[in-house]
Amino acid sequence: MKAKEILRDLVAFNTIADKENKEIMKYIGEFFTKQGFSAELKTNSETGRQILTASYGKNPAIGFLGHTDTVDIADGWETDPFTLTEKGGELFGLGACDMKGGIAAFMSAVSETDLSSLKKGICIYCTYDEEIMFNGIKDMTEAGTFFPQHMLIAEPTDLVPMVGSKGLLEYIFTFTGVTTHSSTPIDGKSSNKNAVRFLNKMMDFEEELRKNRSPFFAVPYPTMNIGIIKGGTAINNVPNKTTVYLDFRICDSEKEYPLIRKAVDDALEGLDGSYVIINDIASFQNTGELVSVYEEKTGNKARPFFGVTEASFIGGDRVILGPGPLTAHEKNEHVSAASLEKTTQVYKEMIEALCK
Image (cartoon, one colour):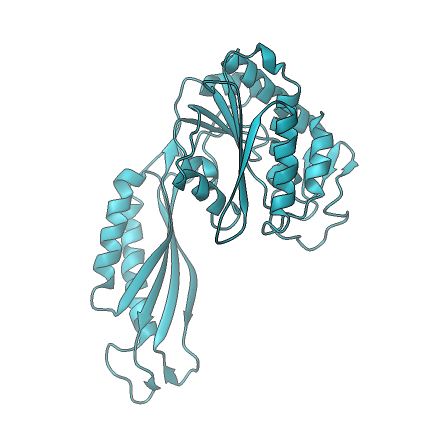
């Protein structure tokens, strides 16, 4: 079955925030079952969302991973987001790029492969909630899911093999104080002032942290971002609660994570602050022997991914590779038919190279 036909079916499912999660997982599971795979759906007891694992053969040599959820519809769409529309060689539809195109490509690659000729097996993994909290891949890893040594993560990369990504450490800080009129403040009990004192210390720390250089990444040093600050109700009231959201993009988690934790704890001292960590995702760099193979097959030099993907949650030889152009999260999201076809071909060649 051609990738374009599969993509048409996948786009028709409304998986914004996993709305039709069970329906799309049923479709994908039945597709692989017809190919002779053993497919299993697991439901998260709290969210009701499902993950899919499917396998064919013994001693699996390669696995494909994709998330089925999409972001919401951006303003300005010119076609029906849930109907795959082809114009000028481009395939328009919500999720066509991120990342139903990649899923369609590995589904098609499997269907076009003579599975009976393979000496080693193939594994398939489909998740939910990648766009927000990575809960689908967390369900898999927490369940002890097996992943083959060689994994292809089908995120859109415009056929550039991406072989690493920075780590992500996300904090929510809460500072407490005592509400009074601004004319009668209590020293040290303004949650906003304590938050500012903390952030000043952290910005000084960021300058030191940036001295840890890593030329592997496009931004060759770790960074800190102050994403959200919420505090106070009126200009003449001393606030009693302030919330601060920070994220760190880390080049070398093993080296930089302890530095960040210590800096945070030191900066909080005496400021009536506490925190929770909402994401702690390790950095990775893949220098495996297959990187050059992907470069040869795609004609593109490997480089690190620009964000965080589900590749960060698994080990082994991880390569992030999918179709393009990169139009994720945009209005009129699309991939080119030529790129989708080329991606399918690369996936098929990797199956044959590793499994035959």
